[in-house]
Length: 175
Image: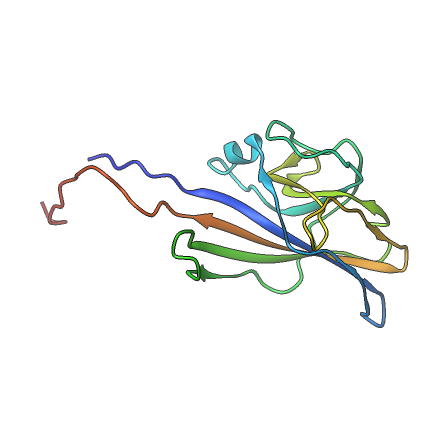
């Protein structure tokens, strides 16, 4: 028996910058989508594919063949809180399973103009990449000052195939 299935994978991001001490929000993007890179899809079958987040000043639209950024600002492996997960069935045509993670760039670490970001298993080993977008979905840049820290919220999503065709034999597990 062979059953072929396709599962789509992707992520959405939200960036929030805050003043150290007061935790006052000084800037925030809307939620925006990424692309999963070819190298990221390859890596998913052989080992750890996400252990950190990288931010960059690159303003180019990410392409599937890239593996990193030309102008990296910073990378962090610091996670805040625990990874949570669940499923979303509000759209019956596109349900998905999700895991959320929050990465933190401490005060002064991600100082600069951030236009792109991605997650992966090393500085130039990205699983995904995204161009920062504002709340209207337009390309944007978020400027992080030296007295601010940056939180990157990411929701990784898996979209299962909703229908299958073909046939298979259903057997007793003891045969």
